[in-house]
Image (cartoon, rainbow, N blue to C red; front, side, top):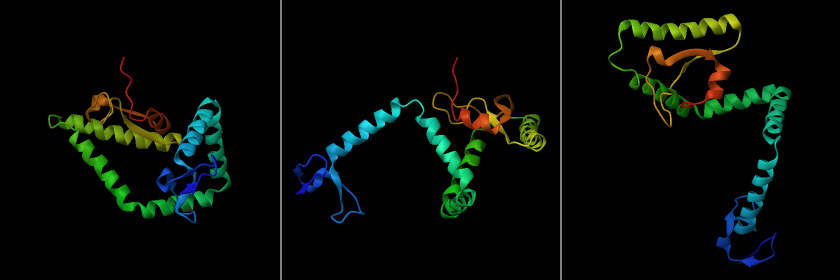
Length: 170
């Protein structure tokens, strides 16, 4: 039996979340109190209109104030997750190959290569990143497109990332 620090009720051990850092290996609040706290905090944040903007500004300020720490963390993350990142990039290449139909002509394949070359040239010319985007995502939730010239467009990377994997159905 353990006493909850919030509601002051004595409850069995299975009424508490596990916490490795504490002496007894259990969280100091019972599950009910913890759920109520998290739910209240979530609603408080959801009601705050500026929460997302404030959080992004806080992260941006940290990144500008500590560029070396951020670079070191990114290097450490990449080194620790290299197999996972390699597998993810290989899976993307394979999925694109699977979404490329066998009926494409050599001219169609040439047009796809040209789109990637255009993205590289625009990146060089304008000084910010451009990417080849699939208008209908290859793995969308509503629809899935093909890797064909009619489904690709060259757009700035910022726009592509904000679009994510969504497709607006009219």
